[in-house]
Length: 414
Ligand code: PMP
Image (cartoon, rainbow, N blue to C red; front, side, top):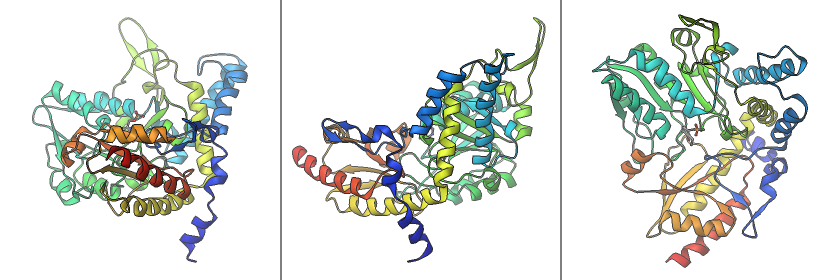
């Protein structure tokens, strides 16, 4: 057995499944098969308990109370900033800005970084495989400034055409925004290479890490990007949590996105001065319990080990890919050699929503639709696909049961 196979053999998903209470429930009288992890991931007991405990024992507002509860709440909340900074290898904790998720993180960059800088004739470079969250905010600031969105193409197998991306990095490009992992295709983009090309041309690069955080080890310094956005709920943490990491000099040069309490130094009716990082970008009362839960989620993932998760998921993806391909008439979208455990597919002559509904009756949760990636659907010439997205708590047995159910229900639709 080689070393990689040995690590995978030692990984027992059934052991981890028991940490996730929801995975034990049934749906329509069948044991749940949860294959919608790219949409949102389930939460381990430790995350649920940490949120519960926070409200039972610690609840107070952060950063403003001169009492014990306020101090405890603040230190629990800020501990997550340290954990997240280590999780993505940020050079400094102050560079980690808490947000409600990737969508807010990207909008923060669009309105605070891009909007004041863009001029008519400027361009923002994205790729065909972006989620709407990494398209629409740029379109909104382009509309206001006269800048344009430019799109780097992908291949039919769902890989970014890197040479074209680099060619498109012309002097008019003022920012590039690329997903680390595609939420539909699973493709893992070669971020270091893209970041290097951007850096040599002095073009800042924003990475949408929404789908990368649950699957990959993230090192923003090694990647060499300028902005990194992520979401907590896909990382086994609570909804309404996320972060933006950015290089300090960029954050210092950016005006605040939201104004309000906590983000100021002094306020008069004539002039307001702003707090230091990260508070400058964190106006108002945040999702305190949520971030405490996100800290527990990071602890949980770290305790398993991201290398082990990655190795196991790769093996599970290979197994699932072979199984999916054995289904007659099944078309897979996204066959990049370097990909995360996401399988988008269609079956000849069967509507995605009809199939998803029948699968639901079998206790199987998959997503069907455009996956917030209309332009990608247009590229493939389909209105929708189904998507099975796996996590480390999914098993080969679930893949087998999924394929059996798929084979059963498609007969009903034939
Ligand atoms: N980008 C990608 C690649 C995503 O998959 C998602 C969530 N589906 C988002 C951005 C948006 O994340 P959120 O809804 O948590 O803000």
